[in-house]
Length: 395
Image (cartoon, one colour):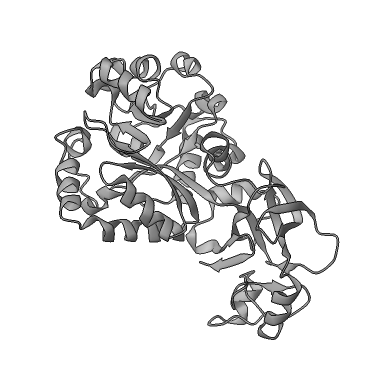
């Protein structure tokens, strides 16, 4: 049930395997060896986790919180700690796992080849990316690339990834599952009809309207990039995406006007990619005008950006301040840790009835500004463990 090195219980000095006791005083999750059997015996029908802070439900902060989980791994109670035996996680924030809501993983083979114009790099069908990735998959050499990316994303506390797969969608799904990451994969359609339930096109401008309508008729979920560049925006890609393709997921939206943002139906999922857009096109999607849609956060191409949602949140926080946006830290955090559940059922919140899939994040000096601490300061070095039901997996 519990592994050595996984947790501490109230009232006992922790002993960390392979770590100093200083690690324990910093709030790292560890276990007292002589209590290991006791913990297993006492919690064999469920467990209570105690943390300095719990982000419950809609990311409400519960100070000195406790989360009770049944033997099926589902949350049966969340609230303030009032006594009793609990697995004490220490000075941590217990929060939902993160979602990377738009990421191209196969192009990691082109690492840091971002020295060409965006269309020459990634434009369909003649961009460098398509030639290289197609050959990689054809030779069966893409699995090792996927494993490296999935391993790093797990290190960042990503529990769900919405992946754009130029090819080999099922391989992406399987490899990510092996690393404990739920993958919502979209197979790119290249004028054909892929044998996969979710499909994406690079741009609705690339295909005739009849083809876009047929995609809508055939597939469960559709996704597309929208208004990433000024040319695509002027070409009317938003209108095609909404009224012809009826896409479920809209990516980028960099050049949208406030009036256009207001026309997007609330049932659509929109995803912004601040670092990639700032680098490639010199601006970021107008997030304040998209808040009514509960936008999600993605890292875009792995060849250019590390698939790290913490870095994406930091960048958006700084950009918002520079742009004079009134963008709350809680909303930025929700883009990666709450709204993905509401839009795509990625990573459940910590609330009664949901399976517990949580991150324990070290909080040695978070103070009373928990959201700002998480958005502005945390990196993967602060991630202590992933908690799934009654399992605590050290990171």
